[in-house]
Image 1 (cartoon, rainbow, N blue to C red):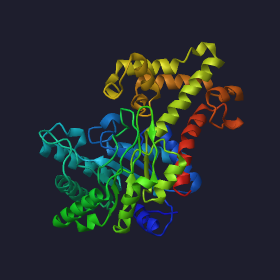
Image 2: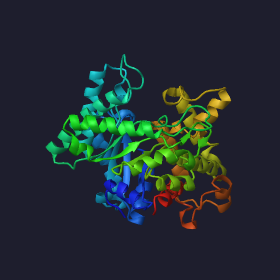
Image 3: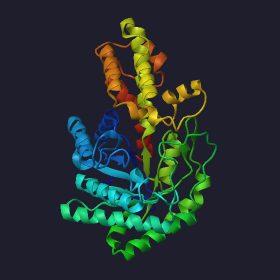
Image 4: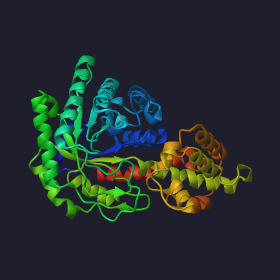
Length: 422
């Protein structure tokens, strides 16, 4: 068992297929499932938050960085999980939430956000200043990106030194799939060219050196590249090792680094294992976990409708439909087609944009109603076979709906554990 992310590059060079799952979710059941699995296997757990999800203004979760840490640590205590085995990561930290503002104003807010992340105890920081701000191109070149990344790193270094917190490990690079998945059908995704990845590293290395941030650059453990994986609303592009050979060979010449793979959701365990083997030991997953949770919730919604006529006909699914229609902001610009197609995407898309709604009061009320309807009620095996056929539920858990939900999430996490060597 490795105890530090900095050991991943050494493990890869030694031919050890050691990786780590980066759990990118703020859903309490997802976090609970990850911590429970980590405790069971004695492994470190990496929980990440994005700049849009958690920032000094609350993000879309309503949580600041310290709020998020307190939230996760409370679940860790309930699960008896060793805090020393818990790593907090900040993903895409940069001006993205404020990119409609002038660059200087957006970067000032990004600096404040990075400082808050460091002071909250985050020790893995993905520096992402690749997006243009007001009046700039949508995507910036490596030179400007590296200059702004170094600026954010300097703020992080100073904050860590002043507060006495551990100096962070960094991730650089931004050539990633669309956050949350693409909004159109995909057939293939081209991996990052080795020349592009090499140039990103070189420009960042030079910029950090010119800013007297060599010590910080020595703690850059990985680079985000596109391995050729992605998911859209209706399909998944699986990893093809043969197409990434030129890219993965780069690591032999840059032994400090590993690759970080984003949007690995819905990849098979074989593909996940191949990613780790090929130098992508940091596997980020988020929508795939809440998709599994939604599957289980909707399965239990159907089961409760069959078991108790007073419960109603799929009240959870109906409540979520009303909620998403009333508040379309999280899905309207991502889903396309006829009314029927939009309905299917709202509930069943791989992009899983329904995940943004589970903390809404109406959704919480509907889930609580479902949990109350099934709590202590033994669910017949036949109904589990009908509505949750891929989920093995031991008899002792058939009257525990939360245990069933966690089991559904854990099925996904188990594939990542297997790929990561545990």
